[in-house]
Length: 355
Image (cartoon, rainbow, N blue to C red; front, side, top):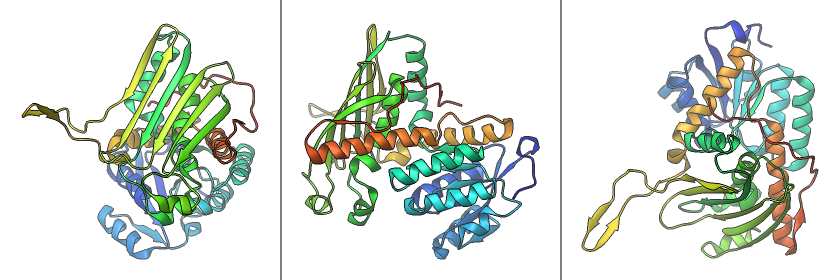
């Protein structure tokens, strides 16, 4: 257990568990872009990858076992970017050590584990922030502020598009929980947040059009989900593992007095006009599109620790998004609309998502 008082310290000493794509991104941000934070340790059983990142970022501590990092007195907070299936175990160790956590989504591998983590975090009072980075994207944060200020009147309809440039490896698909759980969970969180309401029922359709091997693994590569909110609002979400042109994330919220649109397709604000045609580049992937959001969400986490505040997005948001995702999976399998489990009375979200 750390004996340092986070609210009084000049720097929050942070350790990162998992040095894969997301863990490495958070580690690089912590190493040079987050004032008030110092990256002091990495943990990952892949020693070669871990030591390579340690050398790149000049990180003093490295461990095969994440428990050794969590229980060090000179580690004040932990970033969890470990494989999903061990996140419940990681959270339990962090709670036992009273270490604040920033966790990548999803909270856990399934809904039951997610609920156990939610109860554990609530009982312990240990700070927990979930990595729904889209809330921290400058465009989405501004849209949320405009909607809350009444700029479009009462929100009535939301459209959310998520499309990857190319599909992930088959081994990832087999363990991901499926398109709606792995990818659409971000959109379901945005839907709740931007509409200020809970999703009541969903109706999903999907199929395999580019990657037939995904179908053999029990997944789809494209799908649509219709949403109905508790206060009567509507939503429509489309998702695809493959576009053939780039990474494409766009959202529109229609209200009684106007509309607000978020998203862009071009990486550079340049269009080439030649031979009667126009062309431009496209965003490559989510690491490029949400580069600033990953920095902003970590700034928010460190700021909360240093000033004794609660993060604007927590484990309960992950639980609600997971419940919507699983309802969509059940609808896809049954061909019928499905109610969202554990629906509670809708309360507009007060999480700003911006630093």
